[in-house]
Image (cartoon, rainbow, N blue to C red):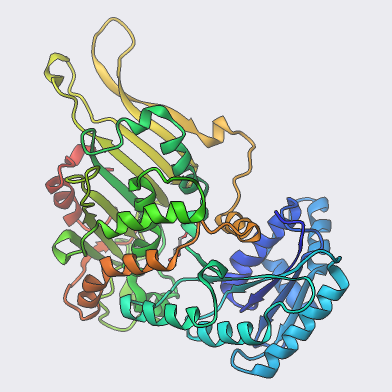
Length: 488
Ligand code: BG6
């Protein structure tokens, strides 16, 4: 991705995110030659760890299948260093800087510039001190000093005010073009595909508006609960965990106007306009749920999780309907749904078109056309259309025009979202990262209801572990004009 020299500093290197996502993604990039071969990776965390122990930990999370891969992993680990230090100690950061400078002297070949990426795999409580210390003591300086880029991941505050406070604190030291706010859904193959589908095909443009589209459904389902992670989850709830970021980002890509170009700012300018055209969400436009134990008792309910405070009203399921007040979308409900402990794992975007006029001339009832973009699992794009049943009858039935990746791109590897995003950072492309004003507009939409939910204003409707969600959803969807037999 870049011919320049780069060091990737992983802060919080001994934590979960680093082990599960950051390092495996870095290894995949190394293996597929997307990481400059001389790139060095420096883990930083509070625990004192011998380098061998650190490498052994990483090996637990990076699985190799062939002898060749095992060799590549050994080569990769040879570039993985570890330093321990506190997050608020200036001297520790000065030592880190000296360490990086030494690596640069060994690996960078002038006139190559020396660049640094700082990956925050950290709890949000230390975002600001770490950002300050890095800017003050670990910023590239001197001959051939290159760029510095910071990668941060949610939570970016817990409401509009706290997000702004965090934003101001980061902006005091760092420029917006140096900050890469991750929403890992933006790195997913099918989410990245939205721009191509919409703007690189002539036929979608002519139906992509309220005259042809009845509603848009964006759905996220997970088949497992919080499982011991309830302490973290309970502070945030499903609305902050998934809807306000991942699903809302998808909504903006579905709804935005054609950007002037594909540059980061042109794309994000359009996304922000969508968010600004939406009103703040109202509780009456939501269904909230919380899962209870599975009927056979094998799977615990949310409140049975020891890490969840007794009597918590935190939602683990949320559905909400949004309206975008512009020419293209007025009157089209955008229905966002997300939940834990449901019947399946699925993330998809479903564009449901309007009823066909004059359908009465056909012998069979007609179903609405749908364009479905399945984000995961089994990526695919399919169009549901009415087709004549083959044979001597003239009945119609719904069938799929199917671009299923497993069969149409057989054997093609779909990179993990984190790999795609790291490549973007190496290239300096911020299009798939959340800009400050985008984040602000997203919080503005959700903050009023979040405050009400936090205050316990809603008792979430129970649904059993492994079910399709709260029973109230059927009526909620029907009210929006999505008939029971058309609900997914
Ligand atoms: C994270 C949420 O942002 O996204 C998790 O914090 C959720 O609760 C996860 O499980 C889902 O991501 P993915 O990539 O597994 O669909």
